[in-house]
Image (spheres, rainbow, N blue to C red):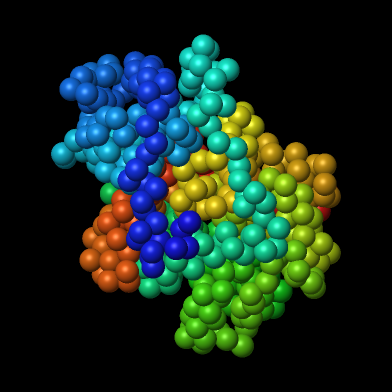
Length: 419
């Protein structure tokens, strides 16, 4: 759906017209009361204030439509209701601050009471399974990745830092609460250097960058004297990455290719992949890590950066269709560190070593991106994006920020070496 938003605002008709169902609406209302009971936020619904009192306030403008969405699809309804304008934070309340208490319900210490016991057996009524498009074979993988990363190079350039790095930065200790957009590029370069250092990239190294984005890591490696093959399956992104490489003056050291990781050949001293595994899909995790292993030269090192969730929550949600999958990353699934360890133990000869955790760094990165996105919205809108798209991206960035702030999500750098 995402690939059509820019050119077909009429596609939002489904968002604005939920299907009414009195039974599902009543069930959704009961679920909202249950969630509000032990969430440190207040929900204003039908003139009543639900919750413990205090905390950020969520104002529901259209209670019927809000409950219809939740009752129709528990995985996507809450976010869809925000897209449609059914609810907003109270004036003066930041969206991520409002979403934080809800994210905290999903943190490790509260996993046991996410849904009341009486309702757990009925979850199938309001939870959709993964669609066929979630299978990331070669054709669908390119469609899914392109749907997000080829939305508009110009749009991404408006809110990313000048290096066009679309992954967590790494900030100086103690600077998370105060860091600004002006500090983002330095923090991104610090992260890129950490990846390159962990992989031992130096002059003469042969480097493979899987899921190269707009080329920032490849350019940084080339600045060390490395020879880099950078691959992506998003066509417009590949063109922009190649243009950025040429503009950097390292076109003789970096080759950008529109290529699936499964089709790459050759041996490399370092294989790098920053926040790409999230788009691979669980079915293909063994294939992904097997490809990394085959591309490593003797003595080579691989480093990946991965957004992860707790293992128990991954197991509980891996077959459900979420708002993020529907509107932002079709076909995506976050792994857990344990899942990464298990896949490599069972399917490869690679050892897994977690180097560092960047969860709070990602929360800061997302806060800065969201502020910049909203600040630059007038320019972004000139690309043909409508206000519902703005609300979608505002929710996506705030929702993700709350996930990292709560500790429900983490971002890890992992080194892989042959056993």
